[in-house]
Length: 232
Image (cartoon, rainbow, N blue to C red; front, top):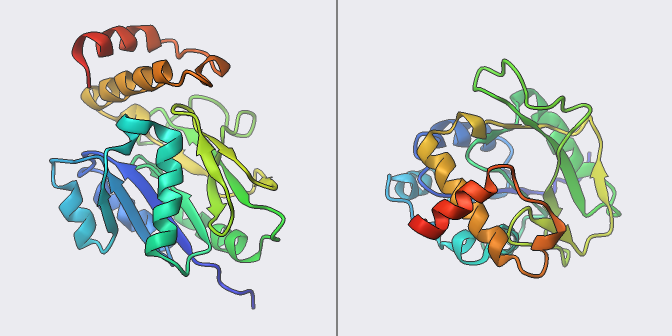
């Protein structure tokens, strides 16, 4: 029998109360170390709900202040602090799900993957609706690899304020048989999508050292103008 290497499921959240019951049902069977939420200051009951579900909840608006890269590194550091027996951390947003039939594969990977791999990358499917009637791109051709699962006893960190990149790892295990992340962000309400659009435009402008290394989203100019006029 392989040695169990406990996994923390972690997330950065803000006003996700409608998503939370299904999200907790989805991730709880995977989180054999625990669940960590860093909340940006929700006022819709999300913080109270997460606490009632037994998650460790930290209120810190780190994404707006520092960006996605530092926020993911912060999740790792807080996972080490609050779950000292954990070996892995995987972050999943409130609009992301792992299908139940792939839980066994996720457990198998975390418990048996050879130590040479510090990161497990999961292919992400960008669904156009909750019914999964179509995807934005064929995941088998464009798998949109997400370096989400990282070993905690390593010096890994994430860089860049926008489109975070994993750093200081030995090797990444990416295979199309890895569990898939089902992403439903296109089903979010317009208010939520506008907030994220403005936030991403803000972070791209602030990513002075690395922002030039990735291009603008086709709606970024629109959201940059809105951010400069309206703020977040």
